[in-house]
Length: 93
Length: 213
Image 1 (cartoon, one colour):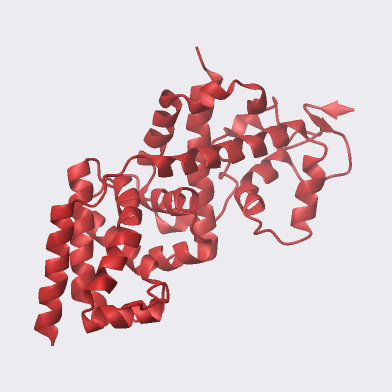
Image 2 (cartoon, one colour):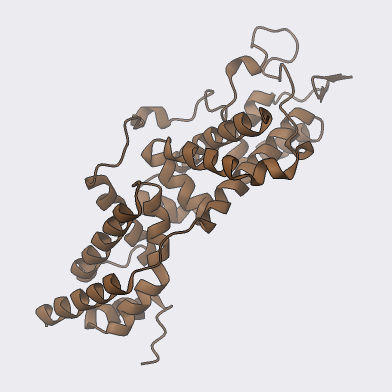
């Protein structure tokens, strides 16, 4: 039988437990037997499978912000910084 | 000429000797990183440029004090965060340290009532209703500019420490070790902050794409 997406088994890890551990699980920072019990739970629970997918898509969406335009270093500012580097080194000689 | 600046020790030596090519190399390889991070902490392009330029000036002044115990880019981000802070980044919802202890409330943006209570005889802590299956939703919803704006807003609304962690980890792809080094966090605190940040962004995404009209 499935109960709200989860088959009734002797598995004692709850969906709530899984949600609190999801970042550690996805970043491969969980030790056994915790990791195995999460995998066991995921094999039977559609709801938690959806949450793993939601997290992975969330991480992907945040990652796509790296394509956000940031202005390139302005040539004038770059020249000023190079000049600041030059004079600072001269001072410390 | 010809020094391998990818070797950090050689790069730092050259910077201390005043080799301009070394400083130019550092500008070319790391300026973008500083801008990407700064952008999440100050709101205008002008402010980003100022904070980044202030950071570079501090690097020029401080290179002799760089101890080489961390990587140069974690040192750069450490300086950048200090500069951003002194500009008064919004951090009204700064997290008290005690609340960094992992607890049952780290529900990744789900509400407590989405789980069955502990007093239920059967399946305590399991879903009261299955979370939405995003894999069945049209890709356009995830790619839409309004969705990406929701992600940006969710990140902007995070407390400063969570924002720094999620940007370095999920935008820049840093390891947790580097993040702990740059932000002075323990591994477990870094994980809690990252989990809360991802949870808040997940919630914002959920609000955007599940309520699509």
